[in-house]
Length: 157
Length: 445
Image 1: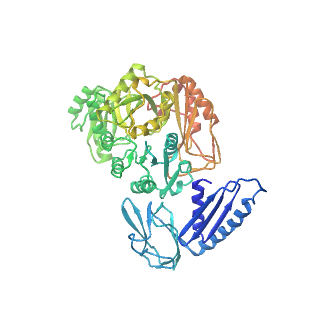
Image 2: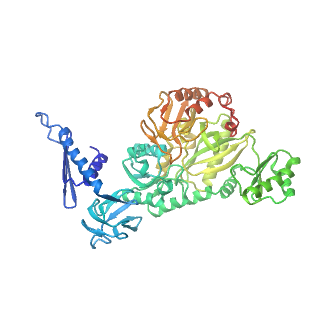
């Protein structure tokens, strides 16, 4: 699987509340497991000894896919995504030793700051446009983000 | 050599640059607007970053977003392509200040050659002929008479504040000058609120002939011959060819030497093109300089065998030019047709989904395009979707090859100008090499 596809897969998993995702085919096995705010990704080639063909990936992927789809559908009805308006680096807190601006469960008022996206040495504060509750933080601290990249999953209040 | 280049452009030129980078083993970053996420340059780059919404001003012209994208991806250079920010000296400066190499000339050279007046002064100092004309406005009919006599008829009277072909009067003899002068002034006043006019030599049926130059950061400058781009519609080039059918080797050398001299005089360090008007008597006059790579660079590549983008990147990385002037040989003839997503004869835009796509092939056929089957051509950006280039031993063979290639080129679902190009390949004047910048205007298809 090339890096672009892997990135899309990870994005897909993080945009839902799937905790563990596993996919296997003849060439590789991919496991994505979430613990606290970390995604752990294992990519490994299965042992090359000849045995009865390993269970094909199709059932596993098929089993995972509907779950992902259902979870995503359920989520998109209730929740909204806050996306980045600029390209830059995502920071959860105003400085390395401060507390993050928001946590899961935080209630954010209109105009309150969610996070910072740094671009060209300027710290851009990303403000809430409506009152909401934070359901999920979708990016890691210091992760690069692009225009339109989802940053937070929120529930409008 | 650069480790990673960010391409600050889209479409076929972004793809062209990515190809050159891949061959040089340089990593690539594509930036794109949100509507461009399915573009070929995005798919083929090693990394891609969405930098803004559809409007160019918020994406491809958004300097902050582009620099920010270069920072987060750790790119060490930016290639601006053509159009967009490629001739923006401020952007080139910002790149430098942020520790990024701008693949192009210095901001000073961009400013110098970007301003028409300073460009004319600069090249004149280097011995390049410019179109005779007044530098300032002509105030009285008396002055006009003197100036016109000095320049030599025919002359053209132009509004200083004007443009778009308005407020221009061509004068063929001294007798018609006083009336034309008065009329031009009142038209200028009415049209632009400023009656000031200047006078220039009028070139009857000029050809647009441009010289490709290439320079490094060590003072070496060479030229790669010329291109004839006379076939234009409203100042937009549609068909280009190399070499120019009427240029003798001696004239080529004179024009080439002029271009090189002008570039050397300002310490030019990248690729560029010097545009000239060539009149019916084979006098050439400097018009302007483009301080970037041009759309039609492929025709020069076909006849010289040189990859202009790769050489531009090498030069930007500080490597000396690999060729001397004496190494440059011209082989055969090349023609390029710009295929636009437009009605072939009305030229109205025709964006939409391409639902059948097959490119021509065979010896001497090159397609530079970023579209593909099932791709949706967007309405937000310019309408050129492909460049069809052919190369053959003679001009006649090149025309036949282009006609053959156009016949094979299938693009369904949208309208394209392929049918228009077929008509031109079949046109008697074109086949005889009898073209000038007024050719299309006069043409009845």
